[in-house]
Each structure stands twice: as structure tokens, then as C-alpha cells.
Length: 323
Image (cartoon, rainbow, N blue to C red; front, side, top):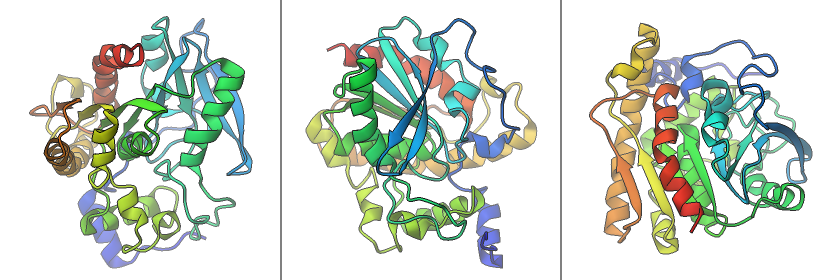
């Protein structure tokens, strides 16, 4: 049974516009039909990979292209049928014949692609999220054995919720991920403000209990999963980074967007920019010299921007993976 929000929580929800939701928070559409996104003729496969840690099959959209791969991670309201990168962009098309395979895990709503302590208690979740274990151990082993994808030297790209997750995966698994990109990510989740923002956002996106994820606010898991706190690991490993965030504000990419959606997207992006600049400061102070920081003067929290960024970073990603 979903827990009801109190007056304070509802006010916080309204103020922060569901704080860290991905673009799907802004545009909620019916579940798509099969084959509605990838161009017909692309070699996209739909894999069911068993996760021992979660005791279930995890759907993975996969396009073979080479021994190295880019993992594309979804936002807070990830659907159980298709990855948002396929629903909202032409990512498979962009990487077709690029020499890089594409890996799109499906599902993981409100998971932060993290290993949780226990199932979410508010919505009677039937199992415990163990996404880091799946992405860093189970899936790469399966892909190596069945699709000839190398378990090392790959890339990971995440947006919004998954922006921080991409950096954390690379921080703790540097051999697997030589490249990590965070697009409009919330990169300092252990601050008091963001802890509450995340709590409210997860309640709104599926009724999930954040305490089952990283524990109470004082639990060390919060800092363990905070890119600002773990930046030293990325610097020490020499991981190639691409960090993108804007302060909000419209650009030509918003030309066809709904006005209400633009307002929400503007607010969400404005919420994220501070943590991205803090990450840059920490990275530079730690001696980091292998990152691109892209902070344009305007831009919103939406798929039009993330798709554009994926295309912009693609040459850098491919060059890194081919070294």
C-alpha cells in the first residue's frame, strides 16, 4: 500500500517539481508498442538475462557492434518494457556501424542503479534491487560469454537519476568502465537538501522508500553513492569523463515542447546544476585532468538535450574505447 504524503512532503514535492525525476517524469505517456522506436532493419536484440542477485530475468536491449560497449542508463521513471534511450532518442541508429555495441538495461524505476539494503517497504516490492551487482558483475559476464562483449574498457552514460549512477559505477569498477558520462545528473545526493528531495521524488515515482535503498540520512551508503564524495576514485583511475548540465532556460531544442513541460524541465535542470559545478571543483582540486565539462548558458531537463549530448560525446567515447 502506498504511503500518503503529509502536508510538508507535498509542499516539498511542489517546490522541487519532483526533484530528481528524469524526463519521463515530465512526459508520461502510455506504454509503447513493440517495435515502435528502433528503425526497422537495425540489429536490435531483446535479451532476458537472469540476475541471481535479484532472482529474476532482466530485460536488456542490445545492438551488437563490437567488442566494446556503451551502457545507456535510464531515468527515475524507467519503464519495464523499453529503455528510455530507445523510446525518446535514436541512440541505436546513432551507434549503428560505429564499432561499439549498445547495452540498454530495461527497468529499475527509482533504483539509482544501486544495490539496495532491502525491498521497498512502502509499495510491497517483491525483491531487493541489486542493480550495481547486475551491471558490474552479472551482465558483463553474460555478455562476454554470449555476445563477445569485453567485460573491460567500456563506457557508461546516464541521465538525471542515472547521471550519478554512471559515475559511481565507474568509480567502483574502473576496469569495466573507462568512460563515464553524466547528463543533467544530481551529483551530490548526500547533502541534507538532496536527501529529502530524493525521498520525495521516489515516493512520487512508484511509492519507493529511500530508507530501503541507502538507509537513514546518516547511513554511510549515502556518501558511498555520492560522486562528489567519490571523485578521488575517478581521478586515480584516470577515467575519461563527460559532465553536462545547464541552468535551465529555453533554447531552440525546446521549440516543440509543451509550455508546462518546459517549466518543469527548467526547474529540474536548475536544481541539478549546482552539484555539477561542485563536482567540477572537487575534480579539479583532486588533480583531475581527463574530463570535459559542458555547462551551457541555457538548457532544460529533457530528452532533446540528452540526445544531443549523446551525439556530441560519441566521438570522444569511441576514441576512448578504441585506445
